[in-house]
Picture 1 (cartoon, helix red, strand yellow):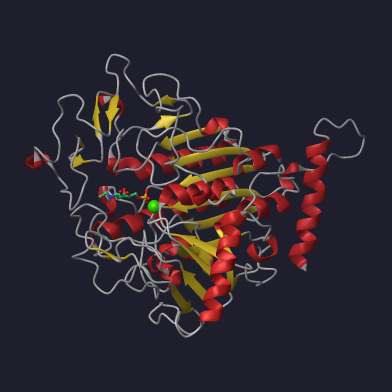
Picture 2 (cartoon, protein in one colour):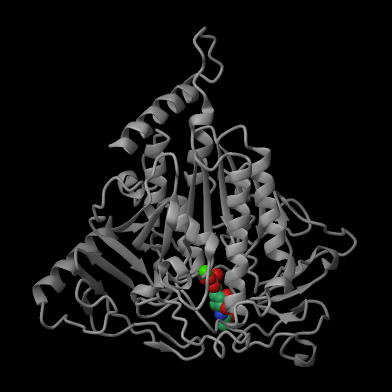
Length: 512
Ligand code: NG6
Ligand code: CA
């Protein structure tokens, strides 16, 4: 109730601001400083069991844990998908990525996947009067059909879908081009040394991991054997842009500093920061000050680096006295993977650590660990610390934040996003009526009540490169998550009526 009242007060004041920012009324104009800032920390490949507040005992993540101690810790929160590009598409658009072609793992030179005409989460917050920024991993494509002009203006870009500013890792750390893009330009590019990128054939004459493994400081375990940059071979070929190339060891420092700067520059007005970390995706090359500190190899060290980045943001909010009225959301884009393509000692030094927590599968998988991720939401002035077992999905962030900021969503936009604000603020523990999970194979799962149905598909059950149970099977699967959260007993044969009901509902949702 307290939260509801406080949120209503905020809504009234923010709404007045939106309607009459130039008001000439003699009354004191409503203060926009009552609008909560929103910092969305979107991590890469962090699993349910990778955070100590979610039960990890082999690693300590004190800064992330602070969010759990001071906010809400969700135990049944999901991304839309078990890989990065589709999850981010769903997060930013409120439309399930499987409704749109071309939302699979994007190439490093993919065109912008989100149509600039589509209403997005940053559009919403901009409309509500927020300063909006994305810092870090993008992986939603850039530029027009055919891909971006790395040597000129990159257009369209996040600036065309609602962000006021952007500082990007264009795709992933393991894909070329290995350069940052700030707003519409590659950072630090020397025009005399233009960038060329290809994912189909070698360009330029730089060595590759395949031909010159002796030049590598980290060797691929599968794929990742094309152009060598900073001693690490990548996915894709690139030449040129030498002065603009990032140094992997400095990446967390670089993007964290950019995020801190955005907060500092916008401290006097409501802001939305989408801080999208590279950690703990491959290649895991943390700064030397974290190397060896986890005892768990580079994956654990990258986790410590991620925790440090979170700490820097929290400290910035503290020092600017913004903590009380800033909503900090910490979550991940998909479940965990240990060997995702490099020999980085993650497998050898994993020890007793369980990245997926109690769940089966991992990144790419149809099983729970594919999409069930940590979700922490802290808003000290409004949310009492607690644990929520409610079934929630990132697809609902858009509609829920629309309710919070009293903005309307245009008809036809974000049609899969439901207002779930009460649950996200800890005012209710009502489960989402149903939840869809989307695996890398394209297969969908449906959760409703205690049941989880996985549709049949003929892709492999197991990926030996990543050592992941993908969970694909030619037969329908049905699990009772209330009794079997690790999806061991397929009870489809015992409950034909439930199976039919789930299949009918999934078809209905798919056909909307
Ligand atoms: C896969 C890559 C993997 C990772 C993934 C995307 C190979 C063999 N594997 O194709 O390393 O880059 O794509 O990860 O190339 S995600 O988190 O961005 O979805
Ligand atoms: Ca990811």
